[in-house]
Length: 108
Image 1 (tube, rainbow, N blue to C red):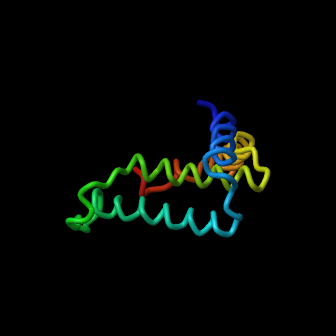
Image 2 (cartoon, rainbow, N blue to C red):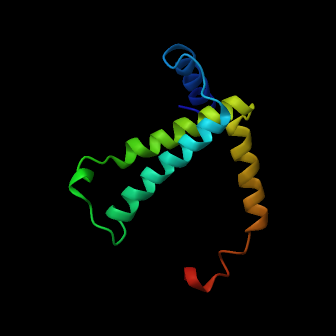
Image 3 (cartoon, helix red, strand yellow):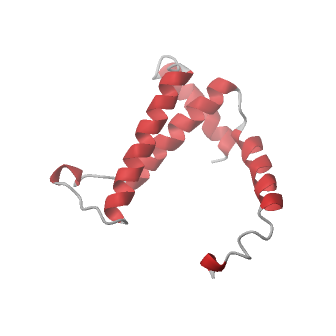
């Protein structure tokens, strides 16, 4: 699936199953909540924290998909073409960081 297709699919889902988009501020808060859920799993699965009994049914892939879904909602609401935005961002990073990481002693 292309990013544009994902944006169209989410828009279609929102306008049928979801009735309408939550406002941008609500979706921003939801995005932060979803990112927090990913962070919780990462801290427990890859970090030093241990899982609680209530954490036994966690699904990292599903939580990452929730983050992507809400991010796509926000992009749709604000008129952002995520394909174009990502392409421009990669160009910016490629110019800015052309030698930055190669010269980072911490990464060797």
